[in-house]
View (cartoon, rainbow, N blue to C red):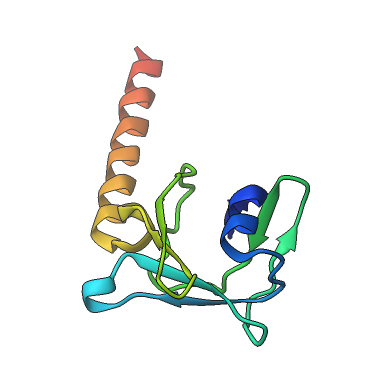
Length: 115
């Protein structure tokens, strides 16, 4: 799920009711392109102050609870929004490191609780 503040969504896409979303590969790895497209496959859910996009399950998405991030965004020449995803969102090695670090902290806390 991707949440975008309503003001940012409106500034980027106006009243667009459909989007096309592309995930980068190769030199664009870690980037996500969102473009207003009347025939787009993604229909955002509009709430009071947030717009939510429900993405399908992705093979590289983290399998753990991650903290929300405010990623870098920029507009492309054709009006699309390019989002630079945080490392944990697309890098399986970074995800493994996070899981291992969390497991280590949990073990240390368990030992402290016994003492």
